[in-house]
Image 1 (cartoon, rainbow, N blue to C red):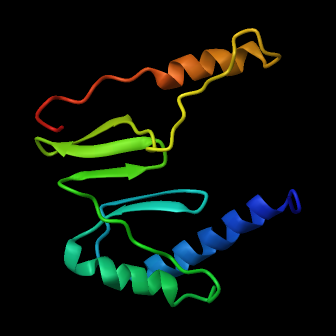
Image 2 (spheres, one colour):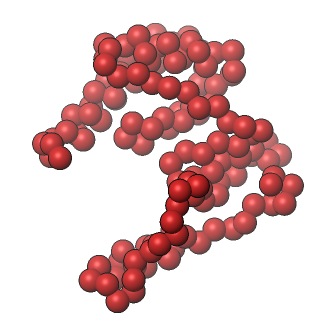
Length: 132
């Protein structure tokens, strides 16, 4: 699997990359969030390619960042579906089409905290019908 230091070093490298890019970037980015190597950015459409080029022209030539655009104000980031309604960002659960919907057996030998968190994490309020 690699060294236990790999995730820490990767995070430090990405943090360094972010700092250097945002110091030179003249575009206002109102929303930016990163989880490990997944990044979500809210920026004007005409500046997306500039931001992407900034990330891809960095010191890490072997790494290439890609862009996924939201469709009709909806975008999926990790296990979260984000959509805009009345000028507000609404969050909901997102499951990939390949989700098997198989979960832990209650009688399995996993800690009870894992089982409880699974139930809490699956609770979701359905989308308003006008979004679907």
